[in-house]
Structure formats: structure tokens, C-alpha cells
Image (cartoon, rainbow, N blue to C red; front, top):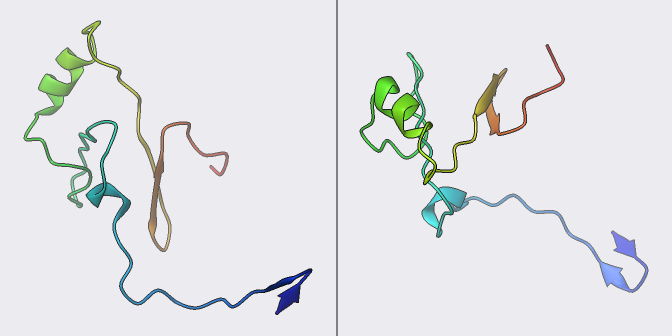
Length: 80
């Protein structure tokens, strides 16, 4: 497809990199009964709750949307 002075080609990446393999700002501590998600820092839910009370830790909630795939973000989803 051509757009202005550019030729655009869409191709499938057969070997995509995980965005978590690069340098990360933080650690994702996730707890789900069916999936192993996040960075698996070896924390229990109680440990994570205790850390979230510390003034030295920036704690963001992590929301999961599961429907034909998994999507995660820190602001929630509008779809019920």
C-alpha cells in the first residue's frame, strides 16, 4: 500500500520478542489460580499487600481481561 511518499507493507512477526525481556521499570507480582503471569518474584499475596503499604514502593493495581487471549493494564477496562 502506498501512503503519501511511503510504501507500507504489513507482515507477521514470526519470532516476536517479549516486552518483559527488555529493561523494565518494575516487577509484576501476579496471582491467578490458572496462569503463571508476571515476573514471578516469589511473593505471596500477603507479602505483596504488605509491600504495597510501604512509602518506598510504587504500587499499581494490575487488571486482567481474559477473552480469547489475555490483556493486562494498570487502569482497568471499560468492557464489563
